[in-house]
Image 1 (cartoon, helix red, strand yellow):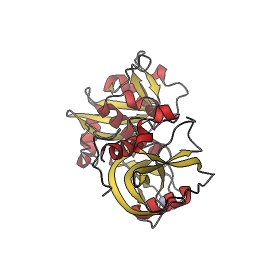
Image 2 (image 1 turned 30 degrees about the vertical axis):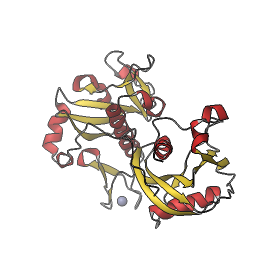
Image 3 (image 1 turned 30 degrees about the horizontal axis):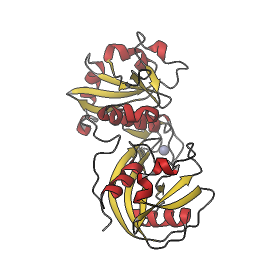
Amino acid sequence: MLSYPASRPNAYTGSPIDRAALKRDDAAWIADALAGPDTLFAPVWRSKSLMKGVAEGRPEALLLTGAAAGAFRMAGGPWAFLGLWQEKPVFAVDCSEAEDPLPLLSEAQGEFADLRQVAGLLPAGDAAVLAHARGLMHWRVRHRFCGVCGGSCEPRSAGNVMSCTQCGTQHFPRTDPAVIMLVVRGDKCLLGHSQRFPNTTMYSTLAGFVEPGESLEEAVRREVMEEAGVSVGGVYYHSSQPWPFPASIMLGFHAEGLSDEITIDATELRDARWFSRDDIRRAGELGFSLPRPDSIARRLIVDWLEGA
Ligand SMILES: [Zn+2]
């Protein structure tokens, strides 16, 4: 059996926010919440998130209260209701149109940083909240027009739906499924070195997007065959990880390899190999590295390693 339970939650999960979806269509409640002094705002600028403590190596999400966030809101960018955090309403607000957003802050309070660069250092709940805000704002700033008729769209449901002013089509935030899988055969697992990896020694699990009309199991088998030429039998779900960079969710699997020979797709991979558990444990000594500890790829590897 190749099914190993997830040993701990993945990064970007465990948001402390209650999405309180029923509040989204209560316009009076939303208007009050936007004006409330205790309301919190998570600013997003060109996909970066407002944080403090980045330079010190102890980043934390920096949410602004209503008064401090006023300038951001008056900048006129998209906003959306995220939910309730300890009973306080939380909104994401996008200020990407500002060339420099820091003067919009009433006083120097933090900086805009790339969530992916610091996610491993953030408190888990903070990372989840910032991922939610970033993903939703990315969708908002890129869906101003209707994909059906080209008309302009207006926000509905407190920014969580875009409605076409011409044909009335409702557009919802997108999340594109991607499969990520550790292929196992006997005592070995299949890892590849992607053409996209900046780290020249890293080997990681294979991954790819699910295509229209395809089951997750079929996507796993197709991607492994395309990238490494290895046949896959059983496919076993492990866990998922929100990946709003810009708009995905990673669906993690362990998969049963049915063939040994590797034939890589050189446009995707520089190399792929079978690694034994002992190889993985001696990665540093053998001159390769594993994916980041906060990645689902690493969780798939570690849970297989320790699940023997
Ligand atoms: Zn339309």
